[in-house]
Each structure stands twice: as structure tokens, then as C-alpha cells.
Image (cartoon, rainbow, N blue to C red; front, side, top):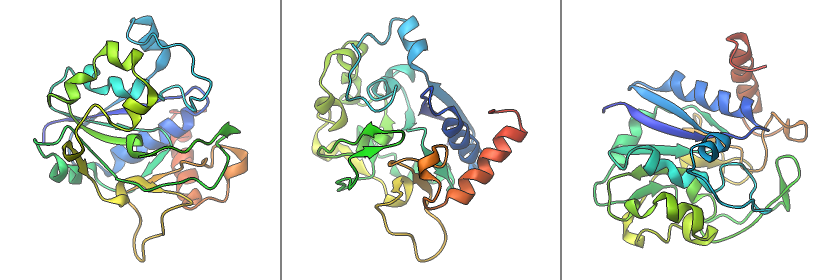
Length: 232
């Protein structure tokens, strides 16, 4: 595999979450990986993001994530992942899901959140294909993926983007649940750990979410980040 470009959503409230996701991802990777933070302020400064503020957007990268194919030059494969992940798996294993007939691949969750709020009091919303877009392996040169132009990302509805209406159903490949294991929803594996834990409700960087699954492992990774000067 050539260098795998991984774009991680960054939120000013959750820098430590980003640092943990990045460090744990790199630590387990056996292939060359380039991790790029998707920072809203940078995209606005470059004129790539012009959407008005959406009061229902739970993160700063709610919509900007769909600029990943553009940022990757609409070539090759690129992964987008939310910042609230902890990796235990080797991203080299994702190569087997890079089917050229697919525009994108993701975990096909059937998820209805139980909580009405998440993280630090943000409203929890429910919609079809929820959390499909939190871990997307993009085939950036695919004709359907090429529909995610800067103009469309800035003007299309959240439903069009997050429900992947820009791709035909048979162009959306499936990745095993272990790569987007939803804490508080998915059952723990009988042995080992998921490839990637997603703290979709809230993670240990928030005071109210200290007792979630794999919290001790997350805190250990956070301490290592601080020791390396990656986070305060």
C-alpha cells in the first residue's frame, strides 16, 4: 500500500481527542500513514468552507469532512475519521475494502441513540445511516465521489451528505463493525479489542464520561500524548 492519507476531524473543544486518535492510529500502523487534521478555520481562510453556522451541527467538522476527496486531489484512496476514536487495529487491514467499484466504504450501522444529549451537552440527533459518515474510506477518483465538489459540500443538505445520497447504494461498500465500534451501543468482543473504538456519546476527555468502555486505555494514550508534548 502507498502512503494512506487519513483526514481526522478536529474540534477546538476536543484537541486531546484528536491527539489520542492520531497517536493510537500511528502506533498500530504497519504501512506509511499521513494524518491530516481537518480544521474549520483553515478551510474558511482558504475559501473552501462557506456554509453558514448550523445550530444542529455537533462538531466543527460536521460538514467539512466531505471535503476529504477534494483535499486528497480526487485521486487514490483516503480515509476520514472523527476525532473521538481510539485505535487498536492496524489500518493496513483496510486495503482489503478498497474495491474500485465502490465510491466509499464504511460500517453500515443500524443505530438509534438512546441519549438526548452527548459530549458536553450537545443535542443528540437521529437520522437514517447515522454514524456511517464518521468513518469513511473514500475512493477519491470514483465518479460519484467526484460529486463532492467544494460547491456541493457548501450548499447541499445534511441529508444529502451524511446519508451518502451522492453515491448509489451499491457503490457504498461495507467495512466490519470493529472499525467503528460504537461505545455504549455495540457489544464488546468475546476476545481482544475492537479495531477502533468510537466514543460517539462522549469520551474520557469530558468529566461526565469517565466510566465508558476502554476509558483506561484512552487515558493511558492521553498521558503518553502529554508526555510527548502533543497536548496539554
